[in-house]
Amino acid sequence: MQRMITYRGFEIHVELTPAAKETFDVAFQIKGGTNIDVLGARGGRIRLRNGRFTERWAYLVAEIAGQAAIDVLLGPVD
Image (cartoon, rainbow, N blue to C red; front, side, top):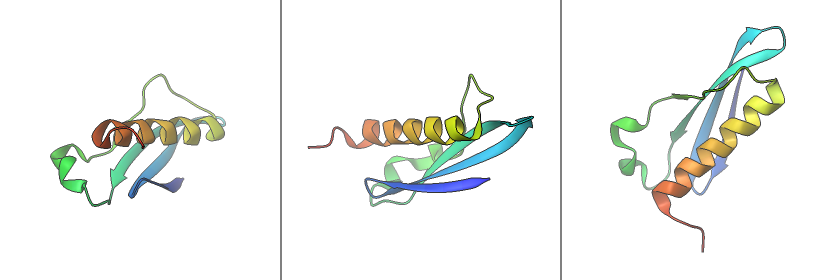
């Protein structure tokens, strides 16, 4: 299962993998934006720890993690 969220000119691609009944492992990847050079080789998929999440939590946690990573790269929103 996949979802894409846009944030500050970037795309956060979220991928869920079934782990057990009604739970998922989750990974995200940041793509796009005008500052993609900042990501360099580190632009790969990132698996989130402390998981097996329900579908709803998996998407939420990945979206927040992706947004936080972008905020670290670009600095605070003015």
